[in-house]
Length: 343
Image 1: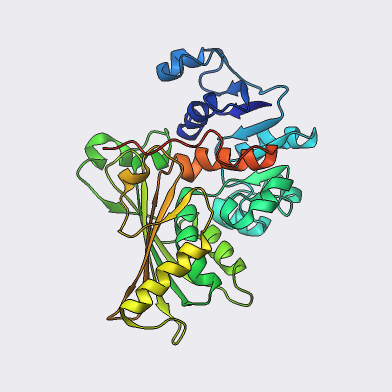
Image 2 (image 1 turned 60 degrees about the vertical axis):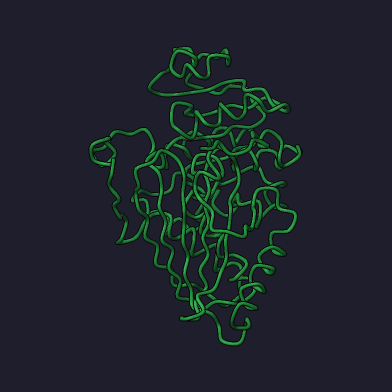
C-alpha cells in the first residue's frame, strides 16, 4: 500500500515519517512540505536520511494520505483526494467537530468542506473502532482530548460521575508545533510553567462532545485548563469529578472496584493501560500508549484520574497510524510496537 504525508515538515509530519518508515505494510510514496519543497527529506531532517524522497508539493497516486497541515489548509488539501476516492486521515482539527457553526465559532473561519463533516469519523479507536475501519475520512483527535476522553470514558459510560468536570493538563512545547513564537523561546519556556486558554481552548468542544456521546441525555460541564511546561514531549492530564451518590462503594473497597471497572473497560485494548501507580510522561515517551490511573479522593467523594501520553505519538502520528491500520485492514498494532524511551 502506498501512503503520502502532507506537510512532513511539521512535528506531527516528521513523526509520521519516522514511524511509517519501519511499517511493514506500507510504502511512503510521497511527502509534501510548503516551506521545503524541492529539497531532499534527509537534508531537511538528517535522522530521516534513509528515506530516499524529495519533498514535493503533491502526494500523487497513493492509497491513503495523512495530512499534518494546520486547520483549514488541511481540509482544502484533502478535499480533491477524497473526491477521487483516496482514503484520508486528517491530523488537524478540520473534521473533528460535526457542526460547521461550532467549527467556525472555535476556529474563526468558515469550514472549507462542511458537506463532509457528518461523514468524518472521530479517530479514537478505543471508542470508534468499527466506524474507523469502514470510513474513508478519519478526524484524528487532538492530543489533549485523547488524554482526557480516555481518562474519563469509563466513569462517564457507567454513570459514576456528575456533569461538573475539571481537566487540568500539562503539555510539552512540541504541542505548539514548529511555528515561532515568543512563548516557546528557550529563555521564556525554560524553568517556567504557564496556564493558557482559560477563556476556552479549541480542544474543549472535542472533549465535551465525545463524553456526551457516551451517555444518553447527559452533557458534561467541562472546565479545561492546559499548561505549558518546559519539556519537549508529553501530556499529563489530571481529571476531577464528583461521584454520583450510591454508584460506587466508599473506602478502599471503592478504589479497588473503580480500578477493576477501568481495567474491564479497556480489556484487550492494545494501547491503553490501566496502571497501579500514577504514571509519568517519561513512561510514554516515543510510544503509542496512554497510561491511566483512576482513584478516589475519599475525603471529598471525588473521582481523580491521571492519564499521560506522548503528544506526538498517541496524541498525533501514532494514533493516525493506528487508524490507518484499521482503515487498510492491517493488525492495529503494526508499526507501533515500540516501547518508551527512558530515561
